[in-house]
Length: 174
Image 1 (cartoon, one colour):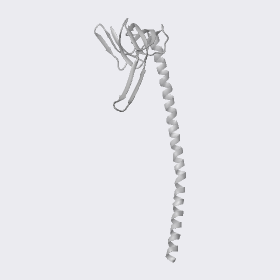
Image 2 (cartoon, helix red, strand yellow):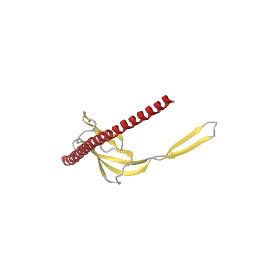
Image 3 (spheres, one colour):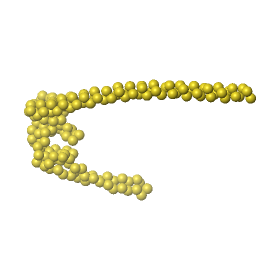
Image 4 (cartoon, one colour):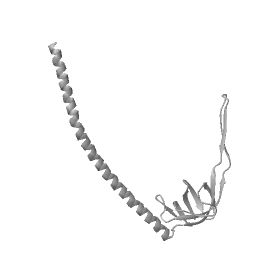
């Protein structure tokens, strides 16, 4: 039995009892974590593939320790130019041990998460309704403002025409 799980933005193939290294997680050493981003689950030849996740599937793991990886040396050089730069870094890692892989998680946990999702959806719908009301009111104020501006433009054009007519009559008299 194995599963493919997403942990901290990376995908891992995990089996029960396996120890893996992932990017640093914020949990303390010795705590159990529940990974619910299960992408694929296989048990005795039966493969379940999520789209993108398998609903109810869960992997339980224990944080063993936080550590640093081996040093990575970054050396840059441009030949015949006298340019040499040596840098390096060490990645921060978390060592995890997979305790169990469950295809169906307990119903209590699933119901809590579904209730949270439903509440989030209703708040999103309310926010969308408010923005549409604001957009409509903004459009009406823009129309009113443009209606006020257009007569002024016409009057300025009329005065400009009158001024140009006066200048042309002066030129004819000369």
